[in-house]
Image (cartoon, rainbow over all chains, first blue to last red; front, side):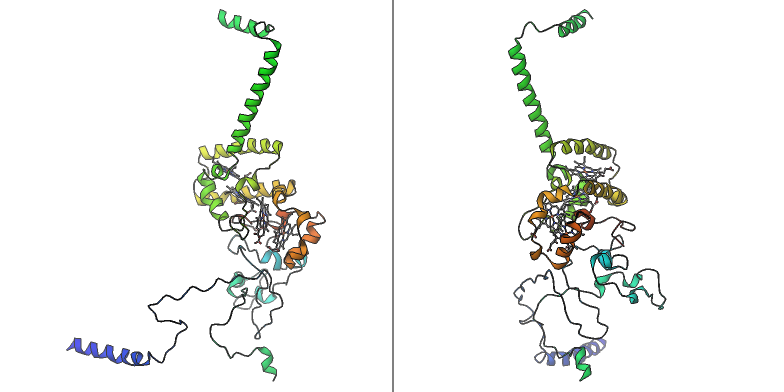
Length: 144
Length: 195
């Protein structure tokens, strides 16, 4: 009795999913069992200046290559140019003061630990065709 | 006892058994042989295979080098340990070798036999290298990267901006701005130019 109950429960759950299988389309072009051909590797451009911001408060994209840049407990290569101390020397963008606030909005004397790992929010971009179409409107659309 | 005395007496007397010509040419030949042997020995120790024969070098700095542009890149030209660490200049070379003897000491007494011990010493070791490269105006870098052959117009903007100013004026040298290009950096707190 218990077995039958369990089995019908399983059917009840998986049934609709099986029916919807044909309608569903994944990003994968082929069936699960077939290995997709490997995508061509994309190189980060050495420089990718003047990328527009797409929305308010967007962390700006990194406009240059960062290959081999060390960001860990011992060293932070980004801050060697972007910190308050160094930005003028390298003519680099200064790190925002917002990065000095801890989660209770208290200003610290230095970069807050929650903002220390730059790549959590800032990333470089490659030129790549989006995998899916996107109807997102950039910030300027707000004005209309 | 007597034999030794006689031997010393013979040494102090002018040579009677050998002609002057033989002595000169013989000495000359022997000199060449020793010079060659010395040179060969130096060459043998001046290879990456030699450097990485020690686990301190192989497991730490060599592993890290492998992920960098100086180990593999689009042009296929690579830098080995001695390219950056032992000056090609002959006299500098001897001086470096004398200093290197203390490494063998470190190896024998197992001062750096774990990753943790290496990390603990890394700042000290790195500082030795920075001081050396600063003192010789980054000679080893310049053996390959010649300033006069740099085309700023082909460089990234950040690069050409720095190279045409601070580097060109001699205010800074390569190692001032390019620390950690070949290995992981040590704890950089307080190191100039860092956070």
